[in-house]
Length: 453
Image (cartoon, rainbow, N blue to C red):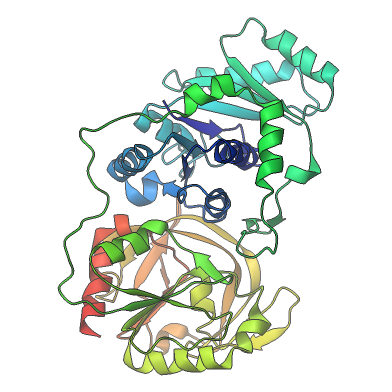
């Protein structure tokens, strides 16, 4: 029936449990389609690294309920098993509401929950915790539970005693094991694209086999076979003019939703990879350039030394269109301060310096300030933001700069709109990430400009 891995809070072990199940399935020759609730790139990359089909995001705020349903049924129907990893705590969503939460996705898809809880230092309180989550909403079906950080047989037996008369399936007890700990950084997990080592699939699978009950789990992982009322998430109407788009993709820039490339390929647009890490020039046949988010602050010296890449970026900007998100925007500025506070020169297209600041994270409402490359005046779309680095303007008021103006106003839950981003006829650069394939108006605007380049 498929299930969702959720927890009382973040850092309870959702990704670890999802990876354990994924590795187990891989060693058994079973194809597992994974999904991730929310706009998370790093957990998605971890789940995509095992060898199964690409993990996909299910985000109600960014993409809407219909996209979530269609994407889930369309993709999960293709494989042996399906699994959704939740986000944060079960009921955490947009602002103080549970809209866009894991619980909301569970309701939309009518799927059961497998709960993982950190049992360290707890026995009887674990039941109280579970009861609270169960009773808050009778539409949420928590069918199974996994206890994390259970490091002795006595601890395990005490938990079993507390839960012996409860109508919930105990799926397993996971002891602490440093070999299955995941590498983390200030924005979450470290991407497998940045590491020289990969997950030891065999070890994870054996650990899962020993500590999880797959006689229960397998029934919760079987996909829902649904053939009716599934609309394709990608509109296959061919594009009228076939011109290549270059996309920066390497160990620096990799915050992409897989549907973006799938959509562009499906409508006949050739895609070309551009690797800044290897100091490549932008391919001359490209008519537009997408620079997604990533971690240029970690590789600031390396980017600064990529002279051919930066020179080609400046030349490309003079004639063609650049769409840059978050870290992609940062390399368009004058300089980036790295994690040690050292400054490194960048492309020098935009008049700012990027340096570490406070965390900006969350969903964003966007309203067009003008007709621009991505959004029209007063048009409303949605995005998200996730970064520590901030920009320091090299001019007193960036909005007095005649070369650039903000494409939109941005607000989050409970805040007022403020101007954000940089744009002109050749460029759109912003902290905001968009899920373009489900945001058809923004994608249409981008492709219209691409057609003219």
